[in-house]
Length: 170
Image 1 (cartoon, rainbow, N blue to C red):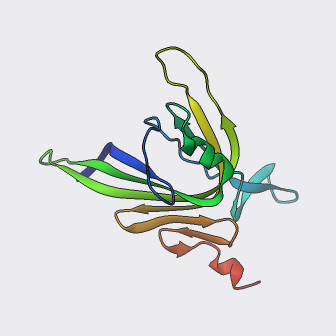
Image 2 (cartoon, rainbow, N blue to C red):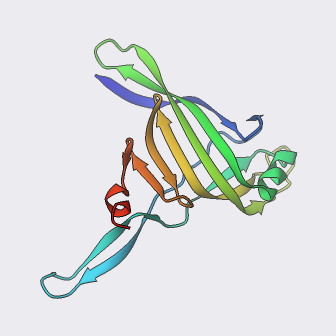
């Protein structure tokens, strides 16, 4: 049995190059479905039902150790791509052997904010860009597990079109 262990390492890329100098952690966006409340005759109380494929705002923060030209590039560009590439470490339960599985997360974004950080002697500035994500694609081991494109009505999980039944009717 394979036991997922941790992210062994990762790199961050923009459209043009590998980004060097960010901090060691990027929190990925949360996909929170937009819902409506169902209540009335035959329903005991209320039920929040999801509107399939519709999600609230998704944002991420790119933390920087210090201010860089790249920090300001993220503040001025929209519709560019950000790619996270990582190696997930796994442990074989019978032998203890380590193996690795690639993960690639591609996001398209619009700039939402820029925090310049702080100046303090002998410490990082803790500046950060806040990005609104309108497209995300997650690939694990060369298999697409999630693709959400808010601007082009695409929502797929494990390769299955979650909007197919709806799109056939409209």
